[in-house]
Length: 266
Image (tube, rainbow, N blue to C red; front, side, top):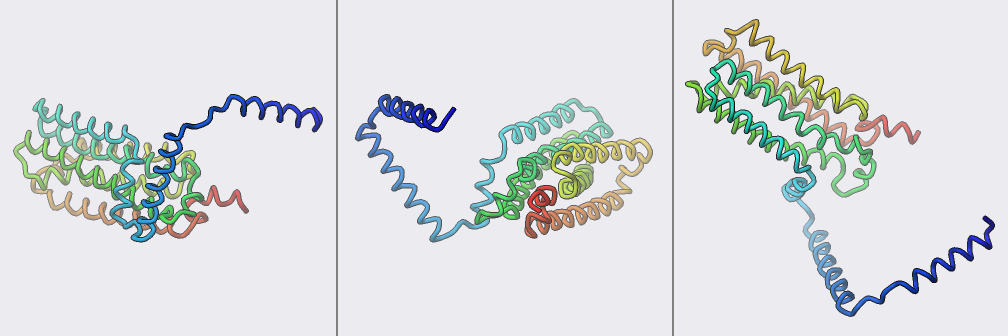
């Protein structure tokens, strides 16, 4: 198609669409102007006072998929069924540990979204960059996971004649280990394989928990609470270390946070 023919067709199409376009009513124009004025006032207020960490963190809730909250509620429902079934101490403690580890997988897609969708470079150009987004989402998901864990521990305690601290250790140790290992994988692995590898490491944590339950049953006894408390404290220290590394890599820039994406520009 030559340029003359192309220009003639484009002109005819423009005339056709212009003839079919309806003129907006005065009410539509007034509503549009009013909306623009309201948005302008809101942005002026935001730029004047800024958006603090608390407000920005709270705003991240609407960007977390609804299925995340549904899945967390489902995990609590499973714990409720096990607790009300009077399955016994062994089944209850295993359920608490495995479900606590599974709560980590619920948050992996949200934490990994910047790398998975390749929008990290775009986030770095925003006022609240990738590091801020990552920290805010870790806070939101951490709080929701803590609430889910507390609910599961409460259900387990209600069905067993044990203290809250002892049952909490059954949930905290696998959760801390799974969360720390998943963050390490998301930080180091290629974006297209990170989510699957996170599932693998969480499954490995659950398998290790089952192995301990079968081979070292006495570790769950009340006399060994100090052992579980020490292990949970070490796992928490590892988790804090991984969170720090993840935030540092995000704050360091695209080369450190997503080198697979950065190398395409060199």
